[in-house]
Length: 310
Length: 295
Image (cartoon, rainbow over all chains, first blue to last red):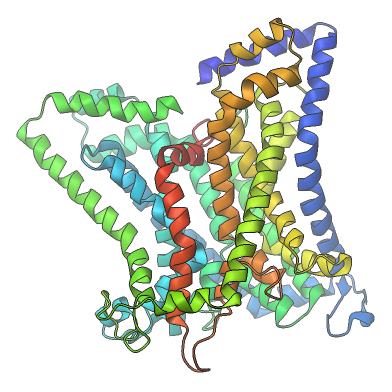
């Protein structure tokens, strides 16, 4: 794949050195023209609203008193940052994100190894694990909710009519369970693709040299898979940070299980405060940007789908 | 993509040749692991199926297999416009978004995979940024904007955010597929006098069709799955999609949980996706992992 990319890349590059031929100029124009619609849509639909969110976040804007809107500077941010609700939601979100992604990574790695190694039923496993991926998140969450509803659910019944959804710690645990079940397959598939890049000879050589299975995993496989692992972790972390659907269905955010997304939603539709809600939006965006920045700059995660630049 | 799928297959045949007893135990171990995985993947879905066939009286009995089977829940939801209308909305909105995303995404992906032009790296970076954008950050401003310009609670009001968030996915997946296409054919067409645009439409588009179908499935699943925009940007049956509508189901009485109806609706919107996923399993795996191994 990479070799053909390199040759493909070299051709146009050489052409570039010479003064632009009519063909190269046409290619350039076509390139822009083909990308323009997608870029316009993306920028108009995200760029403008996020700018509008920044503007709204600097104003007092309560939907119950829309005429009483005025510029208040950073007052909304002060409201959010001094509120225990925000810090609690942020803590809950980070706990859910980190724990669920950690579990997904371990299980996903195991799952990828099973799919990579097993001879019988590999195709079946690969098919079946796509089921959690295909299920609508809300639907899966209802499944878990009823499974843990005392009286109704088989899981609750197995644990002596347990009511995990009405406590903070166990509520978060069930939310993590739902998240792990739904997205581990995706993690496993990303890791499986990375696993296919580990040369079989290297593993055999390590085995001949007396490396145990664990050493082969930690010393040979994982280092070689690092780029794929980092991409998978970044994707999952940022996606998990946005968690909304499962919490909405499982606990509705009660018992202090709100994530930042739930808090933002509640603020808009229950408190009807657009100014504070917008400053929440901006803060959430900044946290996500920070996570992505740390990964890309700190760990050197390559942008997937890019040109393979490190 | 071809390399990814073929490598494990090759190593599999290599091991099949010699099989000492130690390996046979290992084989059993792996197969047992497979069974566990299959069970864990299926049980939560089967649980919903089971709930959907239970009678109202037995729905709270906590048994995994219904003691009495009934189609009442399905009859109930299909008799209600709340659900049927939501199903229509879900289908229409997801299909329109998918078609738009695949068309616009193909154009951009072709340019990214094939053409040299300044600003390409920026575009790829922008797409990554959007793919990871926290959707809640857009909900507040969109809610206000959509009401002001009058597209709140309309199909177009949902199609716009869906298109935006699925375009990066479409561009990634498609450009990964497009890189695999034998491009000499395109050159040959150009030598024969075709313009780059003609080469795209006549030669590449047919070759690209499988990648486009895969992308369409992934994008459709994304739109079909959305909940946050669906509950934030709609307020009535007019444009509410199924995941949002399910959250508004009510039981037979004010105090009864609509468990049966929710389970039946859940099964109805899950089955088509599962069938799609099973039919196109190999392609979906390739599509999901495209780009991820390039880094």
